[in-house]
Amino acid sequence: MLELVDINKTYSTTAEAVCVLDRINLTIESGESVSFMGPSGSGKTTLLNLIGGLDKPSSGKVFLNRANLASLREGELARLRNTQIGFVFQLHYLLPQCTTLENVLLPTLARRRSEIEKNQAHKRAVELLEKVGLQKYHHVRPGQLSGGQRQRVAVARALINQPQLLLADEPTGSLDADTAQQIAQLLLELNQTEQVTLIVATHSGKLARQMQCQYRVANKQLVKIEQKKQ
Image 1: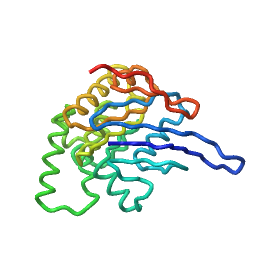
Image 2 (image 1 turned 45 degrees about the horizontal axis):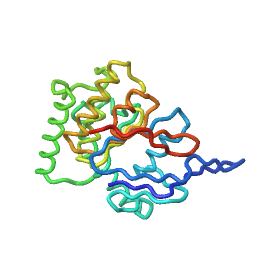
Image 3 (image 1 turned 60 degrees about the horizontal axis):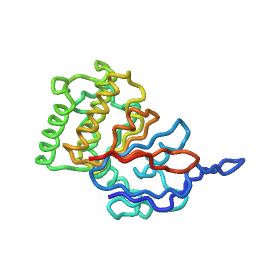
Image 4 (image 1 turned 90 degrees about the vertical axis):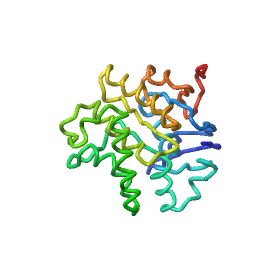
């Protein structure tokens, strides 16, 4: 499903060129759960952004379902991100003036839809809020929710367009231990029930170890740690 070939990412400053990732090669199969672990500044978020098409490598190629992301025009890349990739960030980025249901539906507004498609999207949003345990909060605004609840809304929003790939960047970083574990379990459950490939970037060893495949980002390299038995 996903293949990274000889990925290099270098940032140029006025003083020097700083290499963040060097010769990264990786293949991820459909339906896998994967973690990138490493401290702040190690490059794991950069790697996630390259996979999600939010940034482009300095050299090398990122293939998603055999499509080379670097070769896509901006409009094509935007459509791919909207339809095939879901994003969950440490900060939920919910619109405060919108209800939970409206926030979940936001990604469906990127293109014109028929009334039938709008009704189908509304039905899926309701079902997703039920899956994340917020079926009673459809008309509640983010300011009335806890941090964990807001992150659950963000997870539902990421899944509304039925993406094949879910990218989560420090999804539990701002949560207490109990809530963080609940979000981790939710992501793993959705990995199975939604049949979505899950990639998590985290500095939490506990979260990383719950994924099937674990990698450490260090010294510009990606090193495999462990493969959990199925």
